[in-house]
Image (cartoon, rainbow, N blue to C red; front, top):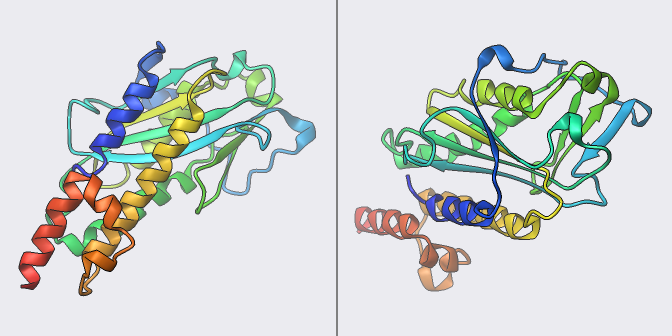
Amino acid sequence: MNVYDAVIADVNNCLAPYTPKVWPANPDRAAREGGKNQLILGSEAAYELGALSCDSVSCLLLTEDAEQVPRDEVVLYGPDLPEIKGDCSFARITVLRTEDITKDGEQAAFAIIKGIETKKYGVYPAGYMIRAAAFSNREQARVSRKALDKGLTFEQVGNLFIRQYRRSRFVQAVKVIFITLPQAPYRDLDGLATRTNKITGALNHILDDVDMDCKACEWKPVCDEVEGLKEMHGIRRRRGS
């Protein structure tokens, strides 16, 4: 499935002017888990990533292209956790290389994508409290002073995300991108996250077992722009004829 590849290319273009730090995945470097009901009070926090007064973006992208995600890795644009001094803008963009998730039937593709998306709700780094809304592109993380004193880094947090996403049998490699640069194009990245959500919505509609009237369909502008969706749409129409 290549329907998100154009978005991945645009994300890469947005970040091209900046030089990242890159760490190959290392399970031994994963953050210690803090438990599902972890609570970090404001008095215990050093700062909040993606605080309400700041930009915040979260996005999940899938591809079958091994060149896009050749290996499991953590990528950071901007200051690392110990270097941040206060609330700041933040983005976490995860790109997964998967097998062909339509090979067991197109009807299952949307369910597989949503199942993979929910993996993020099982990540609980100790001293790093994630707050993500199911129907928003925002993701905030409250970081405790105690965790920073113990040396918590994005490399450690990213390895925990990789471990969780790799629990899906469909995922072959994971790239977790963290962004804390003050000048990063967060608004552009948020627009790409919204575009990703529209692609997923259109995919769900195409794979639904319903009659399709393209002229009246609210997803037509999305299908017209995304080559993979147009191809899948044509397959569905031919099968229904």
